[in-house]
Length: 533
Image (cartoon, rainbow, N blue to C red; front, side):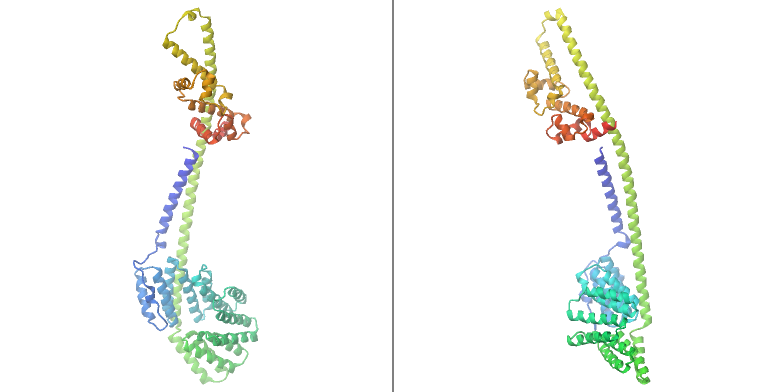
């Protein structure tokens, strides 16, 4: 087992553990995504302003309570909430938006999420809770960029300017106005209308009342000239009346405010209608017309009781707060689970690294021992070859001095064995000549020529030895010489390829394969461990 196989196995183990942890996280209760078995046609619940939106609300509520979750039901709840909102059923609209947001969170429906945030902000504006409205408009702007809700984000930026203006936050109002100018609406007339309206609000905060009044007049003129939705004209009219009232021009302010009230009534814009009634009550009191003031005060009370019930609003607001708390808790739990998974992964990584380091240490130690044994084996082989050469020399001397050996006539079989032994000895002598075998041109034919024989006899002689074949014998002798050179200080500056070429290999890859076959390690590892040992 080498370092590569250990690392591969350890990495595979870590990947398997990570995949199992991810699977468990995906199937956990908090992240389970329940999809309805059949797609609900959300167009069935696309109700207009005059439709039975309450009936739609209860149908969708039944689906929600039955545990059905899908992007289609999410879109239906969003549209139902819009219808309830337009018809003044704000508490039920809140409920529909909360359910839609829960589904949007689970299904990743950023469009529905942005629209729900936007309309919740609008409802808070209706009840004069500009701080909460600003929070929800900010959430709209914080949504990921998506062409499907680009216009919603553009409008949210402009209403956010109004919220900051109403709460006296001058710096934020100016910053948001600049931000809104970088997010133009597709309709240039509507874009110009909102530019004038928002810029006038900021100018009024800065004490430029005449400039603000003029801009609000221009904004109202755009709505009349280009046939915009009638209700859009009520906002600049109300702001004009407020500026005139602040300047003590109560009669003019009352006339403009009555116009705004008629527009709001025709559009069923209950919040604008209520604002106009409150303003007219105050203006007529200042004009010493208590009877007229009483009329608008009663209208304000009727609206508050029928459409703008504070009790219903605060009940819905509490539900929204519970939803926000639940979402925050859910996010915290999800974050904790992710942190725990990351910690578990880090612990597993540390364990895997410890195992790798442990076995790497053992492997390096084994390599050093193997390199040392290879060097000892090479030294022993060199010593044995020297002893064999000396023994052959002594045998030849004794044979030359023995008279009986000169007169003895060996048999055919004996002569054959003697010839084979002599050929093997000759081959070994040639193979021990490193200069000869390290020549890249050295081959079986070269060996046969130097031995004074032919390739057939030389191959047969080599097959009778432990090497088995010329190729195996040559590779072993060259590897043995390579081991010497890799351990030799004179060759330390040589690259592995250079060492391979000095021992007769043309291909460095072939050299590495043969070297590893005979030593059990690569040349670079052998050099490193022989140097260390």
